[in-house]
Length: 88
Image (cartoon, rainbow, N blue to C red):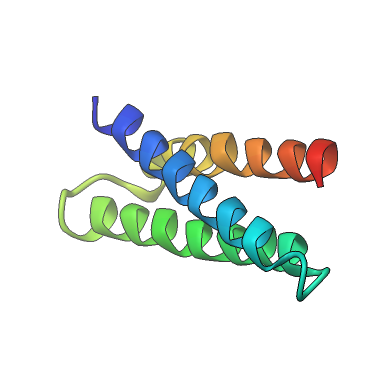
């Protein structure tokens, strides 16, 4: 359940980034690209922090948390890249 909520939060952050990119596109043509890169960097930091909490606080090993990190980061990141490629 927590994984699905975390992925949902990633999609919500992605939507916010794309909305901001779309709003600023008229004055700053590179805004969608900057929004995508900013989302990817921020999302990597957030999922990395989630992995750190899982390893240091919850007691999981890094080998156990790495697949979770890849799923949590990969699904919204792939969606961001595909949406950027297809619509912007």
